Image (cartoon, rainbow, N blue to C red):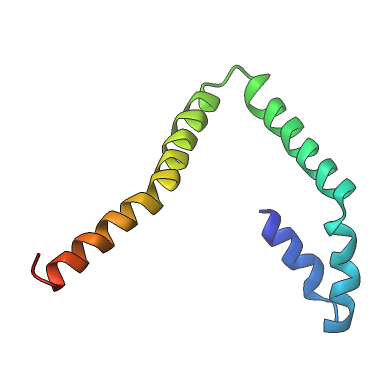
Length: 89
């Protein structure tokens, strides 16, 4: 949804105007405010309504995080295994 909003904002701009439009969005203050606004929206949508969704978000987020952390090690094992098959070890 945020990407759609951003696309709609820059859709009517000329190519030379895009950097000037994007530049303020890359400031540290803008990023902090966006993050805070996102947390406030999350709190209003899930925490204040006593929803069970945050539990699922933590579970699935932890699952995805653990997968991404283990991925490089698994890739090394796979490459080693393929290398061993190629050389007949």
